[in-house]
Amino acid sequence: MKRIVRLFLVTFEPMKVLHYVSISALLLFFSCSKEELNPPAPTSDYPKYFKFDRSEIQDFTVYAGSPNGAKEVTTDYSPDDIWGSRLSIPPQSITLYSDSILDFDNGSKKHYKSKEDSIYIRESDESWSKIGYKKNGKLIYHVALIYTYLRPDEGVQMLSIENSYQVFNYNLFFKTYPFSPSDLNSSLEKIAWCNIYTTYGSVQ
Image (cartoon, rainbow, N blue to C red; front, side, top):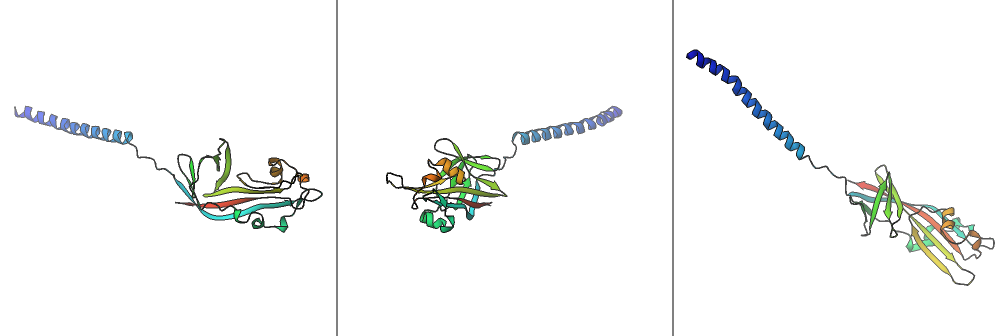
């Protein structure tokens, strides 16, 4: 009888160890399964804040009328001579949100989309205009100023000061407006444009 009991005990010990190992493996399985079902929430890069760094006027151009049509007189003027207090004051900050909303610091909000490094906003007519691009962690925002002062044959004067997100040059100006350089026959008539590039640094 003693021998039988001893054999039973010897046989029982390995089974006890196996029992403990099985429970540990089961607990480990449920622990791993729980982690897989509840992965850590991904961190978002939004909102992205950009603060004003510097602004630069480029491509400033002025044409005046003459008996032979428009002639360039850029060196006779400065941007302040043309636009004065109407020179665009760039936003001091721009914020990009994950729901495709772009927020200027003046409270103006626009729907935007990104394509590669370029940023576009949706206009009221549902078209998309490129307003800038990202480069080396910075955001470069663009706006053009356009000035026209014309005196048609009827004697009615026309003054127009506009903004545009397009990058203006000679060809685009006369493609956009319904007159040609030869139509500027009076020395009082004047057209001008410039492109303003504003750089914003990323705020972490």
